[in-house]
Length: 438
Image (tube, rainbow, N blue to C red; front, side, top):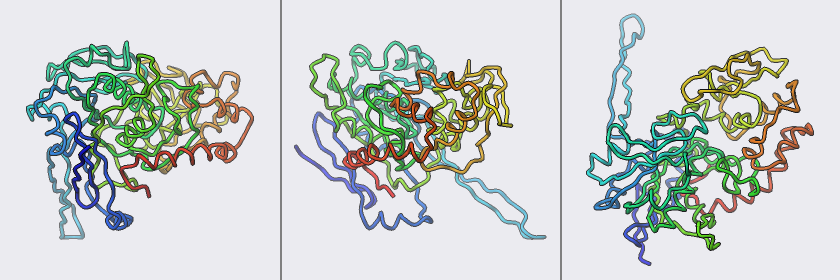
């Protein structure tokens, strides 16, 4: 097997292994460069995998291409600089200049580059990212390009052989948020599995994880496997989508539909981010789904998403999704809100009912996940027997968390039970990292 090494900015190098016309690309870090980046004052422009077309466009030349993406699949195509004059003192004026990026959807860009794009595949929330969580998505056609859109959140979540017919190479470009129950990594699994079965190479355009290197939460027990948790990992995995794809392959989690029992390997190419390490703050330029409208919601998502398995609303049907929580059954809480249908929540939990709870939209960012609000809500509900529903165990990945809460364990006591699983996962995770953890 022949290997070529490409050096990128002395920070990142890619191993390109030539087989079936495509390559497996990974990177290593230059230690001296990494050490210099530990300074909080270090400023550099992060480039996503999509922002490096000079690497992946040659891999698409003269190929029939399919792509799994949505509104988060964007590429920076330029920037505009704006100046604002402000008064400073009595007579002096000062101009503040700011540079704003100009983005294009990856699909529009590929078409402009004369790439033979044949089909678009859409995950949960649809190609435009506007559908409700859990809402079934129908196949359709993109009104701008005329390309067929194949839903992977409708009748099937794994592409069929017929749906992949005529495709020479697939691209995956979705912005993940670093949580096990965020279903884009489940869509990645099924796409890798289908590509492996049909001998179709897959290119993953990597993007930063907004939760960085944080690993936290209970590890999923495989008896609780579902589309909101397919692999034995903690709630927060601390990996980018590219790193995660390598783990899926390396841990042999792909299973053939034939039932042969022999694990599959996807022909995988990762286009890593450039100038990136996981100590860097990354603010998403596009909301990844309808109910994650800003950085605060994304930061609190892994803590508040547990409420999806209870009778408590986490703000769907309001303008503060995943920044507030409450229900008609909570007591001793002064903050109130009433969920109503809106974009991304046509029938929200506790629709039209006055909810009592807490506004945490100004809470400082947290590194991992917090059980504070879940424990507080359970303590203050007047309906403990109806607090949890069957979905909670799927989200937690284990039945232990619900039992621990019902027994009255503290967050510290619960966290102690996660330690061994987290450390074991971290040891496994090391093999697949493309970026430095700080």
